[in-house]
Amino acid sequence: MDNVIIWKSPTPRVRSLSIIAKYGHKMVQRSYRKKEQTSTLREDAIGAIEIEYVLDDESYKNHIKTRVLTPTRNSRNPTQKRFPYKAKTTWGRYLNPKDSIPKNSFKAFYINTNNPKKVIASETVKQASVNYVSSRFHKIKSEDFGAYWVGKFTYEKEMTMHFIISQGWSKTRIIVDGMVIYEGEHKGNVDFTFKKGTHKIEVEYINNWHTTDFLLSIKAKIKQYSIEDAKKLIHQYPKAKMMYAGAYESKNKDQTITLQLAKSKDPILLVLGSARSINWIIKNPHNVKIAGIIYNANNRGGDIKGEFPEKTKVLAVKAHFSYYTLKSSCSCHGMTFHCENQAGLKTITNLEYLFGKKVFGWSAKYSAATLLVPSQLITSTRRTKLAEEEALLTKQQTTCNKKSHPDFERIFE
Image 1 (cartoon, rainbow, N blue to C red):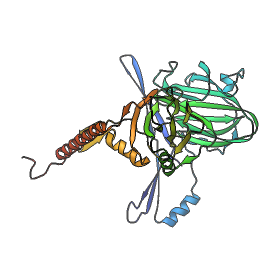
Image 2 (image 1 turned 45 degrees about the vertical axis):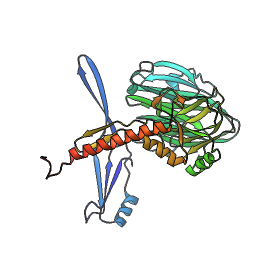
Image 3 (image 1 turned 180 degrees about the horizontal axis):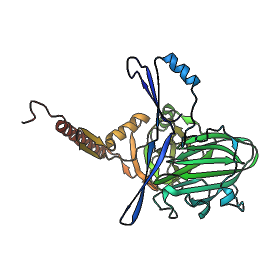
């Protein structure tokens, strides 16, 4: 079951309490009219609650074994079916009746889900992906956006491939040779073994939010490395300068961010961090020597391509680092001193502690299409400035706490 809250020892007599959303998350649409303009608000709501309680752990174990699970609506696996299973029909019947399918790429069909049989736009793409807000893509409102991708892909031998689905508030179905291998919401992944030959891959996508964010990667399994492996690589190149490039997300429809490497006489180590899956493209016009590339493997749908030798070590590291700013925006409200991001010096210190090497260059934005690497150098002067900014935040927090928690004896002084 999705959406389960387990409350341990709520009272001395009740050991365990589970709160479960009966029908899963339900999207509620509300509209209002003001000055002849209609706006729509979609929100997450829970329609009903089931409460289960037991008196001891043994009773709870027996309850788990015998209870009947109610299929959830709009859950991560709304069909509750075992994959793969044969699709009754696919969107291609309506959107691609002539069965026009490219080889080793996708033909994309974009629709408004309020009128799904009308194709608004179509194109051939290398990867099934889309990324936009509001109505900026073919004037389709983001919350009404739907897409169908279809392609024929040839494998020279039997291969197990990893389908990695990165998406926001939406749902996706993936069909291979008429068999549904995945259906779900939010992020997901599934392995599928292709036999030697040509296979038809179909992707059906329905968005349900004011932003549209989707990326499907089909790739051989990537080996994930530890931080210790990354440190070993870094220590092999003591003279290499560590450059960090990061973003929360890509600004491009194809989820790419292009890194333009600035001239450097020293070799560099690239460390790339992101919150969402990003396809990094490296441009190296000055033929800078790249000792290694390290990126976070949290979002495995991303990829690294560009102008660097094949022998370059590229490590997907199992660690969380997705910084995109050195500025912290803070405010004092009531009893809370809240900061949107941590102080810049802490960010630099965290990276240096993680990899055991000083950060030499920094390039980052919340949403980016391109980044110059580095966009700024982390010099001693810059570190001093960051330390001053951090000290100011600490002072502001102290002042905020004094206002929020006045002393009873000195409140009138």
